[in-house]
Image 1 (cartoon, one colour):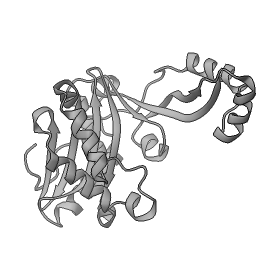
Image 2 (cartoon, helix red, strand yellow; image 1 turned 180 degrees about the horizontal axis):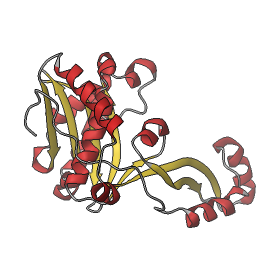
Image 3 (cartoon, helix red, strand yellow; image 1 turned 180 degrees about the vertical axis):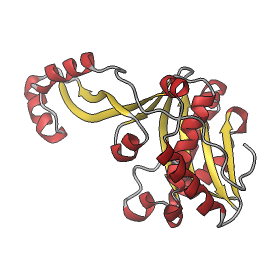
Length: 242
């Protein structure tokens, strides 16, 4: 068995946040400043999409945000989720299942009706998983990505959920929001031939000897510790209804 680490995943203890209150004074002041600056540019609106609200048009709007994001402008776009038509077709197939459509929820921030940022989450009940998110690069000075991330967390707290799993990667903003590293992801590849495993390991980036430690890492990983604390973020000035 080959194994290679994929990074640590960060969680936010929403139950603790709900009990202890949020935000810190400095955080509240910063977010209010961002909201005022954005509202000065036009009419701010929030949209929440899940269940029967999903449509091809919504998927296209998410793709439009990605097309104007740093992902499309500085990479080959392979990490995008909605940028290409064939990707949106796959999402439409998944959303044809009413159970999945209800679990998948998008939070979209708009300015004068233009979608400028989004987060896509999977709601499993007690735990909500951050799946994807992006923002228009020209709106970066107004911190729209940060605003939509905090809105998602505030709504999850208000909805009574216990944990927000932000996944791996881009740990800087997650730490700032109070997320702690709770477990590690390990990519595993089962190969019956030891010889082929040794050859494949040099190409794939894993090694057979890593498998034991990877297994230990999986056993040791858990949702331990507690995260930062917040309370629901109020609507931005001039925003539309949710």
